[in-house]
Length: 287
Image (cartoon, rainbow, N blue to C red; front, side, top):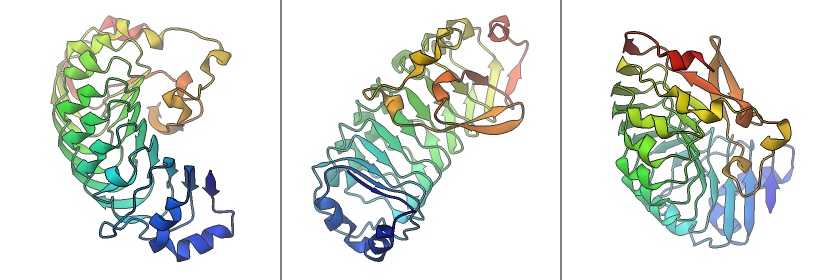
């Protein structure tokens, strides 16, 4: 395991030679963490990367990384289980080669400058439990191939430009979801009744969209929002996706709040700023 933070002197040497990163990583095993070291142009799409079969977890969040995700990232990191590139300035498209990262469990691309559609090839990641794409400029419809990612517990697509109807297959196929955020996009139409199958859902944020019609009376089925547990029951298991500490922004009483360590204690439904008609379902008032 290698961990480089802003408090180390080693980070300065690493940043001076970031063009050598692939060769540097080649000799690493298991986990590499490089955070808050202000490294520029860490990602280079034109560079030929050697395969890194030993690397399991790569954390590069909170840097000043620019450029594009390498087209061959799926071949470079075939055995990666966690990839965290959040809070950088990465641009371009999510490459299709990501389909080859078949053991990937957590992908966090939060707050970058990614654009274009979510690649349909992402549906090949059947072991993925956490997918965070919030805070980019991703567009078009949510690909139906994501219904193959049946292990998903966290799906955060907020603050993008996604359009189309809210897919009915989310409730039919992604029944393990605990967090579903579609906040601040451009979906239209009604909330599908199939959402009633999301028994494990604790956070459902579909605020600031163009959803319309009647709010369906499905919320009594969100049983995870009602169950009271002891604090000890919320300890994170290393085999659980929540061991990767997901950070979610939730609006509470008009203020945006960030939840990370205590996310599993949070329950939230936010459907504000849409175009719903008629009455609020009685089931929505019983939480």
